[in-house]
Length: 232
Picture (cartoon, rainbow, N blue to C red):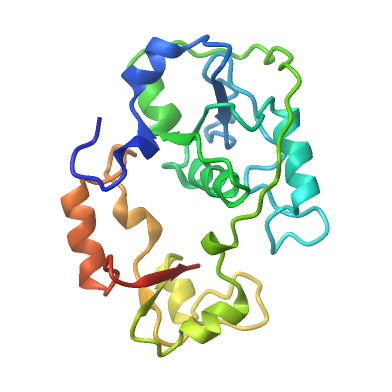
């Protein structure tokens, strides 16, 4: 288990998952398509996959799926109100962390991310499969919105210039500087935002960086525990 984190229980290690693989009460979610030539279809046995790894609205992909839409997605995955969930991907936990956040946004706190994801699991020679996932049991999911973990355009604007807030731009440097507009109408960054690409808090092996290293890196750009942090 990672040491030094304020909330180490938000991550699980491959050893932990291996001991519980096949547990019918645990829902393992594969949160992204793995890359390769051709793209690899393997997944961890028992894992299910959401229709889209970002869990965004079908009507407007800028926003998270709405309560009814999220309820339908999670119930189809066999995730009920009391279901423990472990998410993983092969994108250095980018997509798994998104699933973690969406579940917590909708009030489901029994969710963790597999540290190192599919790549670490496979590199250790642990079982993988290309079989279709088995049908999941019926589940009832209650979408209880926790607005405190969401930053809107209005709340972000209010944070600009607020000394008690920190704004963290997690995109690429080219997006931050405006060199790459990613097809958006406007380019650049929110005034006062600090830049640190999300991948800079990950270790080379795809696991999360040690807590002290991560803490020092974030403190250098003004992301400290006393601040309300807005990320984008």
